[in-house]
Image (cartoon, rainbow, N blue to C red):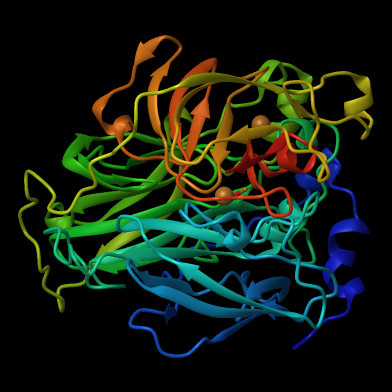
Length: 492
Ligand code: C2O
Ligand code: CU
Ligand code: CU
């Protein structure tokens, strides 16, 4: 079904999410089965399937249909799988009433393949993507990236998970039966109005601090329930939210193991019982469900800068999920044990076969990136912009020029609040945060890092990008990105 522009965009622009209105948002019931996204398997060559951006009415809430968009389906997109060493082909069509793109977040591909804001597909158009895959196995994602429209387009559903497999390193020893003991979790937060429509209307503080929702969705369902075998289960978690930072943990405090970060496996699993995941970050964890059923919870997101404590903070918390326990923890989803299935893995290996060894040259220069909020009443009233090093994103301006294959240190500093900083075309390594070395789990390959203060990154881009289709670096709080906290770079 194709909906008119008014039907798609109308829901977002006709109503403004004043705090009072968010207060009247409906409370939804969760607990339906976790949807396991279809797989669009591009491994092994073959054809070039078409994925159309389309609008639909989707049953997310009981008794209501919400206007959503998706890639090749009504809401969100399939999990796309690609093989290292192959060229993955796919056609992006557009059946919604505004231009879209498909950006391959985390992929090491040329600027011409990157799908950023310079590669729009107009309504009725088709883009033929051919992606040369050469990077370690990893959990990535894809989403639309139209300049100043990324927030709204991702919010309504133009996003999905992407998994790269490496045929030369087929068995890491981790669970790998998709949907059974290897489960994708796309975690997002949304606001629903009393008519059951998703509401996206950042303004004032919800524009400045990023737009958060009062309902938590996993794979498009509200606080769903997954049935898992009583053994080791691998969860590939994507924070696909516009702005919310999650602080995950299980209700019973059980330990779990981080086995991968944005860019691929860690050499050794890291035991933990709490995990912070900023927008656009991915993590793979292994959880032992022989310990029984539990719930995945999150602590509230307090990343609201100076607004956090004051009146504005109160308004922001109007859009907070309902607390389920002391300390304001809220439910993300629940897990039930399915005894009809046996776990393939009962003991987690001490080292993970095929984990990438980061290879960087000696850094030859240092660049500084100051993320600027551009505070002021202009911003509060809806004007204003955000910037990096004082420059707000301009499609016609190249902000940085890199040399192919040269390692550099990027020193990123955040203003007012923590910002998830993302670089296209590569994976980097985090060297330090606020002058201190990072812990082992944070040394893995990354393409997003939450900068709270300053961070030093080791960056080396081995793919080309010219001024016509440059790479981006930006804050992945999508409202900040849309307001201009983004810049462009070439690699030659
Ligand atoms: Cu997730 Cu510029 O992208
Ligand atoms: Cu990206
Ligand atoms: Cu930001």
